[in-house]
Length: 329
Image 1 (cartoon, helix red, strand yellow):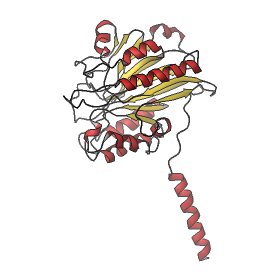
Image 2 (spheres, rainbow, N blue to C red):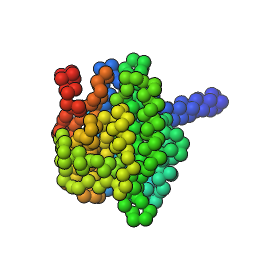
Image 3 (cartoon, rainbow, N blue to C red):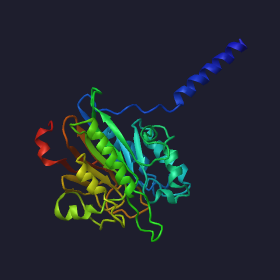
Image 4 (cartoon, one colour):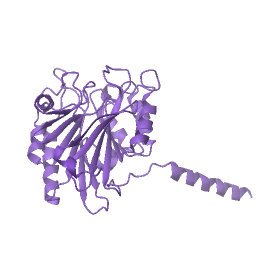
């Protein structure tokens, strides 16, 4: 009897271990309705279960349940207190606990919490539900997430998750993209064109807005608020020019400027901010919330809107606007 009990305990332990082991994220694809929905979280500035961030976990879980995204993308400044590794694991655990896969790129504040950028990127590769490890090579910071069609036969969308870096060493200004990252994107874009003459819809996500944001809002604002001046990197490495010449990416989504949530257009590309998603540890002129982006199979364009912490919707639009007539009611 004792031997049987030991065998039973061993069996239960094996099952429990298998259940608790993080599952490899499945390949992403459009659903049976032909849609794929992304939730952008930005500038969570998570400090833990305190008066600054205590409401953030409940908000994230509630909004994810309400919107039912296929993927969550965090565009930087996820954490705002030490120990950085523990804070990152904690907030990512809340997102991953919803069962929705997620990707994370870093902002300028993440590596200020007692853990270096490379260590944070390595940590993200190990967290349950995080797809960074599936799509980002070890030691790299930039990656592309392919999204297959509903039947899995083709690549319908490509989601670029990029690291816009933190600061320049000489004057502590925002660094932005390096030339090597621009060339990395050009190579991925050319590779995609060779493989897919029809061109999958491309979107790009990162933290610090491109220098072209300000001019886009001045000349072609589409929706949303601009309550502060844009804070782009000091140097322009040419990422926007690469996007415009590549013709693949039609939507760019950044964060960093907490009081901006607008969408503007430049050369056929939507330049958009997410909605500040964080707590009260930093300036906040807008109610916290998230940006939603919905792609539709066979449509080169997207629909986007803001979902606020209070449940209200703001600034729904279709890009490009000529696609609006083709979308189902």
